[in-house]
Amino acid sequence: MTATGPTRPPHSAPGTQATPQLAALTQDDLVNRIAQVLTEAIMKGGFAPGARLTEATIARDLGVSRAPVREAARLLENRGLVVAVPRRGFFVRSFDAADLDQIYDLRMCLERHAGGLLAGRLTPEMDTALSAQVQLLHRLAEAGDGDRQIEEDLKFHRMICVFAGNRRLLKVFDELTAETRYGIAMIGRLYDDPHEIARTHEPLLDALRSGDATSFAEASDYHIGTARQRVVAMFGPG
Image (cartoon, rainbow, N blue to C red):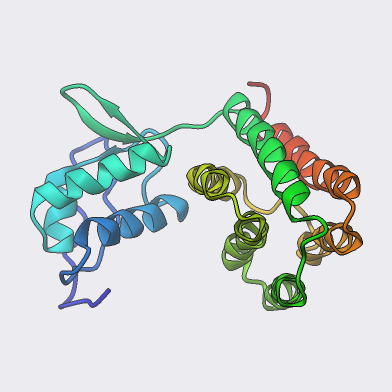
């Protein structure tokens, strides 16, 4: 993304949330790039839950027409980050405890199955890649980069789905990723010690190395189940 100059200050009607400043875009795959910009703005709290995505303002700030902004908003709707309200437009989705509980429930099923497919087929190259990802989580903990750690945490789990070799399973996982990341971003840190995030991935890798699908299922259920309990508790009753 290349900025062409200073962005205009956000404009908002009295009583509404100000639109965050967004840098102008160039061309090439415009819709996906706009969707990425909006996703990052939502993840960082630039658009609060329930806020309206005003096409005209966003298009002006990004230096594009309204049509690709509308298409980008539809992509975010498909990813579970915004909802479309007839004759009113797109609004940032509000999550509650029940939403996150269902997301984690589905993740437990997907990742248990992915690990079962991968158990006994873990190559040295796959092992090296997953081990490097755990070490990256430790380095990000040292650096205090919580936002990046969330992204790389989810990337570790995605790698397992990729290595499992089921493209449709991976597609469903990817559809859940934005919702999972948004839910965690709304809460903040899951653990007081950021190294704990890295450490909780080590039993998953050990279970894959054992080649025992049952061991991985137990480790995965504990890992995701613990995160599920913390997230739901932090959101309060559904």
